[in-house]
Image 1: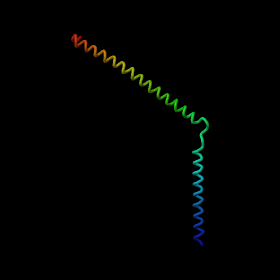
Image 2: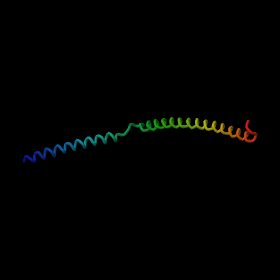
Image 3: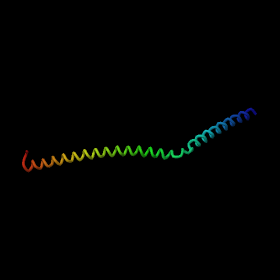
Image 4: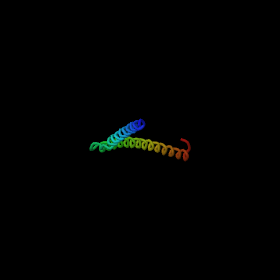
Length: 93
């Protein structure tokens, strides 16, 4: 009989532990599944879009600067080519 009571106590404590774990999981699930306040996802989307806009503007400015730089380099190269052509035809200046 002593074994039966001890086994019941162990089984009961296991059941209590399982119930506590189940309740904890249910609380976690209910917290995770709680709907966000109305308009929250729109605020997040707006924030993300503004952040993306700033990043794209920065990239655009960098590209425009690079375009300006390449245009200047192209003009310099064209002048150098013309100068070389003139030197080839007329000799060194």
